[in-house]
Length: 115
Length: 113
Image (tube, rainbow over all chains, first blue to last red; front, side):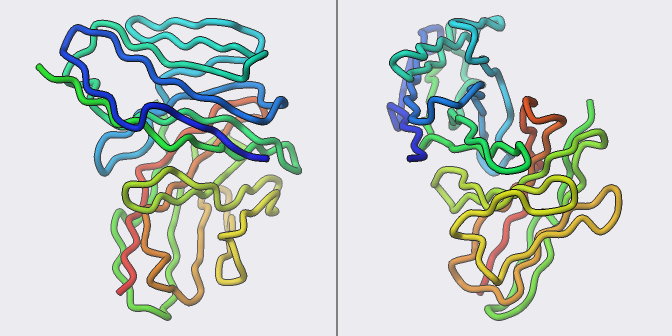
């Protein structure tokens, strides 16, 4: 089936604390896993992705981990700041004809960083 | 940095009317997508387009929907006879190659009255 499960649905942290968002996927053929940040009324903005041949990737305060065996991947934000407040979506591609890969999105996590 | 653009930003229409949503993908990208997002919900796939034809479409993408790439730059989504439940944010996305990342446009908020 096509399913990406994302938890938690809401997350509230104090500024400076870490935030972790977790996703599971079902399609073993998915070969990369992007994370999108969406501020209210704005586009989903790609913030980081991880390829299926890598276990971890870091970009400043953001890191993603991937466990292919368990079909889990996670987003870690350290030293959170108020401007990190947004809805975060994980996604996994599902290969279709013509080599297109529609993204299956998780349900989203609303992150609130309290100053 | 090149970005996907979409027009209009907001479209209000009466039920039963036709609407055309426009997208200009990033110029060297080859794969194009439409997604929609009902308020407060997740982003859902509608259709993918490659090599001037539809590659895949979802159950949402029924006979009322069509896509076109009329010239080398624009990618349009047409809804022939809008329904109330078509009210949503519609996002266009483009992708450079089969293994590339998808970049989203700013969206068109469609309101059907």
